[in-house]
Length: 513
Image (cartoon, rainbow, N blue to C red; front, side, top):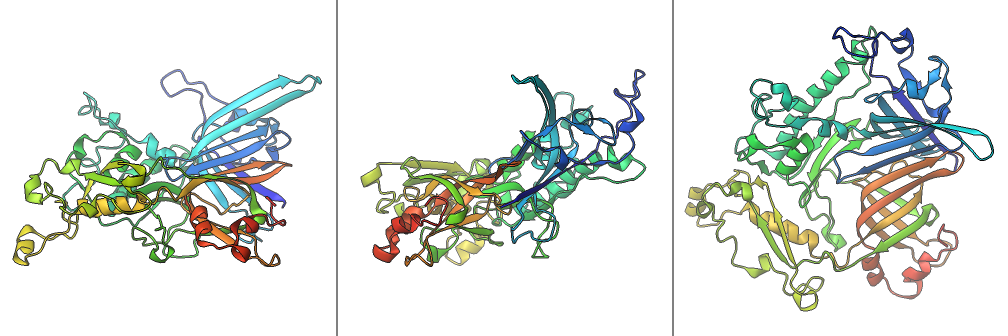
């Protein structure tokens, strides 16, 4: 299918000396400071080369790596090893030429990121022929979230640079008040911490050159999670990478996702940001019953990709009882500083159905035994006092009602996401290169179809990680790691005869036929 790719490197280091300006500077050749700051790496791919990207919704940063031929770069007359440095910017594009998503244009962007490592290897083969290669690897813009460190060291009052950029709640005006919504918190982190840090990075490189150009992008944001609030308690003592701090405050994992997404510069929906985007949203998990849709509200529905048998090269799928849960406990550790009785947290609920799946077939303890699942919510309700609806105790008492508790909502969401773990599948699927497939999308697979006198067998899964691999003269494949596959559930719903899932999978026209 004629794979096509394009790799561009943008120099961000305007090197004019080897060392710093401390009295022992060693000037460099002028070729390092002048000339074209954009290097097309595509011509350097040849026999033995490879290009790979890997990204997940469950990791702070995606990774990329490439092996190129060690030949001379014409303008600078040197090996790429002598020209590329850590923190140079890379843009990777891939596609199959007939791909309708990119016909007539440059290949779609798969990843943007920074160089972390440059290595050179030289060897002599048994046939007496030399082999020389340059290996370049790095991370996407999630690397910035790991570079920004929050450390409260003994001398931080004297040298605040030891915190790198963050006394977030003091120096940068990031609010940590009881009614600070998580979505607004993400917005402030991006606008007041991340992008100013990126601006400083850019000012040291191409922006400092006479051209006044910078290839380092700012990060956009798309924050659409539930209206939970960030707890002010413990905010001043939060330490670690910026990713760690945000993950800790925003219930990432059991209830929400936080990840960097590389998008096209211009989106079909003009209201959505393009480029490099920090996404914060509710877990986009669907109920096992298709008619009920998403378990948690989705302000923006996740994208989906449909593929047929002809695109499937291999499939590994399975299910087990390892993650079965039927007794659920949710804690609010950041709220322990508040009088629990006043918040009515001491007696969260007296109804066992709210936390115990005694009779639910896919998790019943009569079959699976007692399975305990416990998670901590670091957020609060609309008033950060545990009440999801923000009602005051006086209003609740006057109306002779009971305020809906945030902790009860979180427990119900945790139950709904995990009650069918015995039926949902996980695994990996290898496809002919799919440049538009990203982590955080749904993948829908069609087996069989017209011409075989069979009803197509269709199932879907949620993609948590995507790896694109391009090997020149061999091909382009995409490996997707998925959760919550519905193949087993679809088999149960299907009948025999024309609806047989097994017969549909043995479609002789498919890659697995």
